[in-house]
Image 1 (cartoon, rainbow, N blue to C red):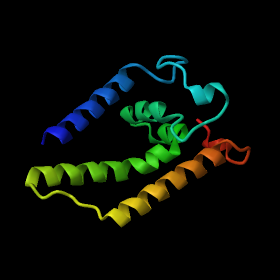
Image 2: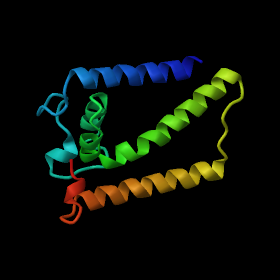
Image 3: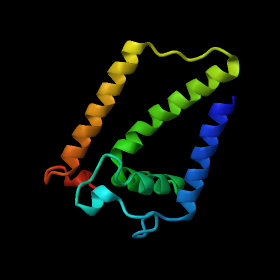
Image 4: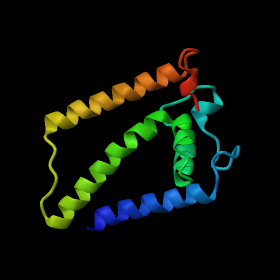
Length: 127
């Protein structure tokens, strides 16, 4: 149970830090290199989305980074399955082919999201 406890503890600490130090304030968490050159990567707005979610502002979180908000339930599901497998001693095993397909699909969605949010038509996706 040590690995899930460390991951959950680290995520809880990061979430608390993002709640206490508002990333909406310019420069509060440093400078994003891609945003500095005017490109919004798939992660841009993720810190603000976490902060908004800690205040239960779901619309504001989606406005900051829609991809993060949509992906969060799937990430939480995977974390629960992994932790449950560790707890019961029955490891959660995902077939290699499925892992490959999901990874390629996720990278594709992230690339598409990045391209669309940097076009005039997708400006509503920009953080």
